[in-house]
Length: 555
Image 1 (cartoon, rainbow, N blue to C red):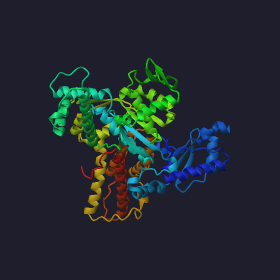
Image 2: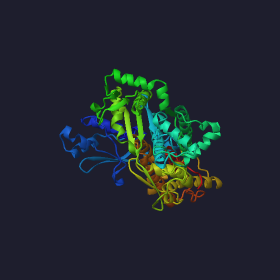
Image 3: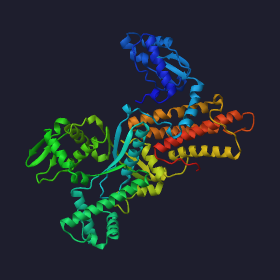
């Protein structure tokens, strides 16, 4: 897990003091591994060092804890240290250390919560997500994977990595021919077969192609005509998909074409490399990649007996191409791709790529409801509820936030009536309202001519109310939450922390009037609370920015 001392200068000093105490006490060197106690009364941070060292040292954990504490020279950031339970060491920060987060937030601004890694600790991370076939519009499940992939990429960038968002376009092979045939038959008013694509969007696409290229674009019925029409249809649908994703606030850095991999010779070069590495066999006229020794359930066909490369051959070429561009490759795949993982990792081994560089996450589906009842299918797509229909109904912020506040590996029920409700019971509005509420405080201060001064001038020692301290600690936890959410690919951790931060601010606002008596003798307290509120607004804005959700000034 993320190390707190790397993310907070106060904790860095505490970590260093504990390491020095180990040496001073004659104890083995070890990572203090600071963690927050589950009970707030036990302090701000704790270490289980004595419990972990007991076997190596050959002494009782509590005795080791007492030795450690006796040798500890705590930095000024620490107010109290105590041994607790069977051998925990609890540390309580000084009030100055607790309130120092205000100055840090205001100094770092939008960068608060972002880590600056040295080059040695920074990775080039490629995040591929959605990659839906360009033969139909995106469904709401694609939207969930899109929002999640985009937010994970943002978290990884905030954690100090160089991140690239990528969409792999399956624009080659049988599905393109079948899509072209579907468009041609639809244009001619002929009956579709069982394998063709259905839905009102097909007729819409036919009309769009005619408008863009003229009526003659859909003439002919030969193989070349079908291939040409299929290519035009796929590119038009890819453009629609790009627009759908942009409407959700998701934009990609790279769109990689499967067809381009074939036309550039990358597929044939990959097949040749796999053969040269000794991982292929010819069976019944087909070329197989022997993947079973590397964890796959069966060997995979690379080239059919008629000489046509398979989709898996394209996937291998794509993996080879990505591995040359990235240190780590993160795939977010749909719920129907569980069986794909083993063959992908096996292909990596065959290509000489360390499979540890690959990471595959499977996204589960979304059930769309309204007042607890399943939503009817799309008027235009026929068999699915499309992403843009949901976004049009509930809004971008609502859709994104609710996609992100639940773990991707669980099936999600999205009740449109519930998530669109503009109330404080709705988590996205609850968080946004906290941000807007602080904006209102700032405007009121300006209107009243309140002289807030600077944060450096404010007497933060006056912030002693429990609600103030709770808000300070929630703000200080933000960088660690970002780092852990990035490490675990868990957008829900950030969303839930944003809700907790909003809740602590709403309690503070209720119990600690920011501008009450600001012109009277307690103006110093109002100034301290004002800067605390402004810093909280910055942290809320940073959390929402990583989730790609807006932070309104008014609601």
